[in-house]
Amino acid sequence: MKSIAISLMLAAILSTAGQPARAQAASDANSSLLEKSEAGDAQAIKKLTENAENGDAQSQFFLGIMSEKGLGATQDYKAAEKWFRLSAEQGYAMAQNNLGVLYANGRGVPQDEAQAEKWYRLAATQGYAIAQNNLGILYANGRSVESDLSRVVHNGVLAGRQSTLDRDDAQAVSWYRRAAEQGFAQAQYNLAQMLAAGRGAPRDEVEAAHLYRQAAELGHLEAQFNLGVRFANGNGVAQDNAQAYKWWTIVKASTIDASTLHEAASRNTAVLEGKMAATEVARARQAATDWLAAHASVR
Image (cartoon, rainbow, N blue to C red; front, side, top):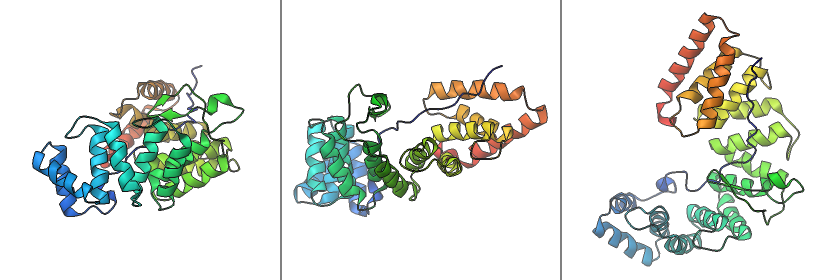
C-alpha cells in the first residue's frame, strides 16, 4: 500500500529583509527616492546617497538594500555592510537584522555567528519579527551532540559546517513565539516544528497543528504540506481526508519552486483518491480552488 509522505523539515530558511523596505516608517520622500533609485535614476541615487552621507538612517538602510541586491547598481556586499552598519549603529532595526544576515552568511564580512546574534538581538528586542525569527534559528541550529541538526540552512542550502554557538531550544522557542505572535508565517512554521518535536517546550501536537494552519493560511508552502499530513493522520486535528486533499492540492498549485513538495503532494493526493468517494474528491478540489482564488496575493 502506498503511504502518506511526512515532512521532517526541522531546519528553517534564514530570513533576510523579507518585509518591505518601507516597513519601518519610511518617509514619503525616501520611498519615492528608493523607487526611482531602484529603477536606476541617477539623480535619485545621488540624492539618496547625499541623505545617507548626512546621517539619515533610513537612507543608509535603503542604500544597503540596493547594494546587497544589486538594485540600481552592481551587487556589492562590502558596500551593503558599510551602509547597514551606519544605519544599525543608529538603532535602525531592519538594518541591524540585515547586518546580522551578512555576518551569518559571511557576505562582505567574515562569517561570525556571534556578531550575527548580537545584531539580531538588537533588532529583535525592538520587536522586529524577522530578527526574532532569525535569532530563533541561530539558537535552534546551534552546537549539539546531534551534529546533523547543528548545521544551518542559509537561503535553502544546507551549509557543510558546524555552528559556533551552543544550541538552546528554549531560547529558540521563545524568539519564534514572539515573531509568530506578530503573524510572521516562517516563525509560526518554525515554532510548530519545535513543538511537534518537543524541542524547547513540552510536545504539543494540537498547538503545532494550529500554528501550521496559521502559517498555511498565509501561504507558507511547507506549512500547507504539513497541515495536509496532520489531517491525513489525525495528528493534532480530527482526521479528515478532504482537508488533507485540499491542502495538498493547494501545494500542487503553488508557483513557488519546490519540486520535492509538489511531487510528494501529488503522490499523497493520488493515495487519497483511492480512499475517497468521487464526490468527496470533487468537493475537496473545489475547496482548494476557492482558497486559491481568495488568497492569490500569497501564492
